[in-house]
Image (cartoon, rainbow, N blue to C red; front, side, top):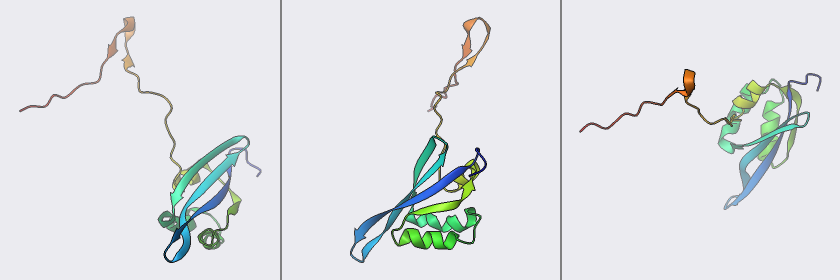
Length: 116
């Protein structure tokens, strides 16, 4: 991985037992960049988007490997945009704050009252 702003991606399948045998339930994606690691889950039904997001002719092979219960280490490096397209959701850690005004005043959000 040459670019420190890009992520290395791995996908680990989680299987479930059904009447038809063992099938893919969901995939746990893990993206790493240095010591920064991010993980998220993607349902099996959402893997259809993988060939559209992964810039490789191997994307179809990756999906087959996951459906057969084998983990995949992607050879490509990915940007943060790729992670979002693959289902990663960025969580906001800051609570909403009222807009500050001079002298310690602030504007409270408008509350709509139900009218009868």
